[in-house]
Every structure is written in structure tokens, then in C-alpha cells.
Image 1: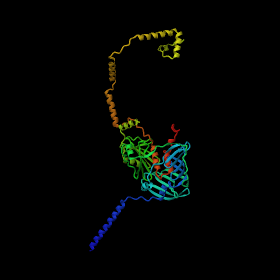
Image 2: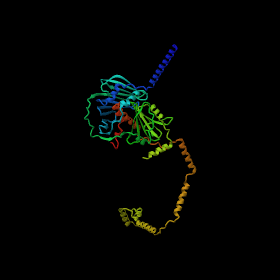
Image 3: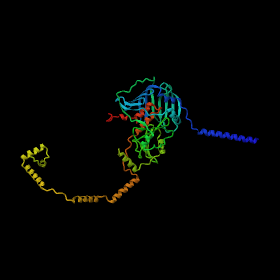
Image 4: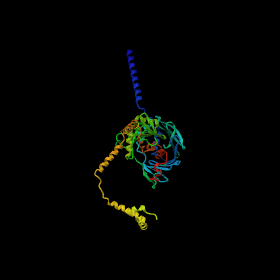
Length: 360
Length: 154
């Protein structure tokens, strides 16, 4: 009897252990759920469509370690869709103004009254449904109380899990969700871009409802960007697009054509940062002006940096590829090598490319 | 009085302007030496008109062509030179020597790619509207190129 009881105990213990083990395995196998979105993050996303304000902001962008460009900006915003930005650059650059009204954006020189017109931005999917989960997976969000311009604020730090892209620091007005100050720093901690309100005033919604675009502007249309269908892509590239191995955490969000040009632009997002891959036909990677060649064991890649952004350019399987993103140079080079790099072009490839360029 | 010897042939041909022809005629009225030269020129011309015209010999064309072919044959590149050129070309192919100029770089400069990137990044709802507009408009952080003074857009 005692022996039977011992056996039963052993079986029970084994069963409990098995269940516990399976539970542990199941818990480990379940994908890590992203942390819930902090309220200030959602407030930032929703503020542009809800809050009317005006103010003055300073914008500074570093282009390398030694050069920075700055501008004072007078901002008027009236939701949902009126925004006017008057830029007064610090330095010799000319003044310019941007007005967005609905889906139309115009940019003009306020002194010469000449400029361009085009669509405001590019169609985007719903951020909270599509992008926010990616953001919470790819960035750690740290919040802290802060104050700015005499207003209560929350400081948000969005630190990338992969240490190859910028960290964003936002100071968000608690009352409205408007970003009062933003900083973007590179993987090495150096500041890349800063914006900060010097004056900020909340306005009643509708305060610019009667605003009109100056009637005596001389505007020329900008080259449009339009969504590319699968048929467009096959027509432009002569086949399906190359499978580009983008850095971890990026997801495709759209494909576009610029005008009637032969370039397909594929857009990726990690929830916060944007990556663009340009693809065209060709076997010789004619490099963009200003880029520098890097010899890899597989073949040449051309690289260019501008502030927080990196460009890599190479050819692979009869395609010329260019990738631009706020991602470090080693990470983009690694992505190009994972994708595949054609060896240095042979003489007859160069001859063919040369002859093709002779034909208009 | 200066003579007009160099204009007399044209005077006979009738190719002078009316003013020059009148000047030559006026000169001839006073200059016996030039009148003599003109008579000599006219005599030569009359003599040439008396020579009967003759058709070319039928064998002239084949002989001429044969002569040209022979000349071309004599100037042909020696075989060893062709062999040397072929060897050099083969070596160039093998060694990937860059005989041709590099194809023109893409029409787009790097700035175009960065600017396009900024345009797409500006659509992100968390992008700072002033910064995004600034970057998409002025990359590479310079005056707007599309508004720079130019013949089309002064």
C-alpha cells in the first residue's frame, strides 16, 4: 500500500513538473508583448489634429561635426489642416514660407513671391494601429516629469533597442500634447537635430479659418509622388523588386514612383524612423554625386552621410539599389551585404551602360 | 598710275561688281599696258575654245580603280600589328582595364535621395512639423535650389 502511494506521489510530482515545464516553455515561446503606449506618446500623435496654436521655434540641424544650420520659424496651426511656417534662416540663406491647407502644400519665397506647389506629405496608414506596435517593440520609452516655458510637461525618451539609429527626446506639453522641444541624437550620442519653442500660445480652434493663400504668388508644380501598383513596379523594373534585407525592426509601409521616372521607392518604418529603398534597372551602380566608394569582399558600395542620415548605393542582380535611412553606416553596409552585392562591373557591362547613356 | 592686272581676268569673266567693272573699263581707256595684257588674256581664252573636247578612254576608270586598290593594299596594317592590338585588347579584357570613361553618374545627386527621404519621413505623425518641413525643403541645409537664380527662374 505504502509502495503504491509512493508511486502515485512520484507520478503526481512528475506530472506537476511536466506541466510547469510546458508552462515555462510556452511562456518563453510567446512573443514578448510590447509595453503599453504611454499616454504622452498618444497625446503627441493626436495633438496636430486637435490643438490650435501659434509660436516661434528654433530649428537646428547638424551636418557633420562642424557645420550646423539654423532657422527661426514662426508657426501658425489651426486644426485639422491649416499650418503656416515662416522660416527666417540664421545666415545667408533666403527666407521662405510653407503653407499647408488640406492636402495642398505650397512653398514660396515671401519676398520674391515665387515658389512651388504640390501634395502635402504622402498617404500614410493609421499610426496607432499600424506603427505604434512597431515603435514599442523597437524603442524603449522612458518618461519623466519636466517643465518648459512655464508649462508642465513630460519628457519622453525613445531609445532604440538596436543601437544603430537615433534616440528621440521629446518634451511634451501636458495640457495639449504639443511637442515643445525635440532632440534627436545619433548612436554616438552627438546631437543631430533640435527644435525648441521660444514662444508658445494656445489659440482657439478655427482662428485661421479665414486665412487665404496670397493671390499674387507665381507657383510651379513639384514633381508628384504617387503610389506604385504591382504592375507599375514590374513595368518599371522589368520584373519583381529585389528582396532587400533591411535592418532588423523595419517593416514595409508603401511603394511609390516619382513622376514618370524609372525609380521605385519602397518605404519602411520601425515605428518611428523611416528607411527608403530606391530601385532601378541597371547593372552598373553609377554612384550619386558626392558619395565615396567602399570596397567590400563582394563588390563596391558607395556611401554618403548627411547629419543623422546614411546613404548606401550598390548593384545586385541587374538592379541598382540605393538605401537611405537614419541608420548607422555599419548597419546599412551590413544590410547591403546581406542583400547581395554585384562584383565590380566588367568591361562589357561598362560598355553597355556607356552605350545606353549615349541613347537619349 | 597703278595697273589693274590682277582684276583683268575677272573683268573678262564678268564676275566683277558693276562699280569695279566700271573702274577697270575707265582704267583700260587710259592704260595701254593693261589693254595689252587684256588682249593677251583674251587670246589665250580664244585659243582654249578651239581645242576639241575628247571623251576619256574607256579603260581609264578600271585602271584608276585598280590603282587605288593597289595603293590601299600597300598601306594595309601589317599582320603583326593586328596581332599586337588583339593581344593588347585581350589583356585589357582579362585585366579589367578601364578603357572606357566611367558612365555619367546618376542625374540625381546624393542630396536628392536625402530630400526624398525627408519627404517620406515628414509624413510620420510624430515628426516635428517645423523640422520635417525644413529638412524636406532645404536639404542639404542650403538655400532652396529650385528657387536659385537661373535663366528660367531669375
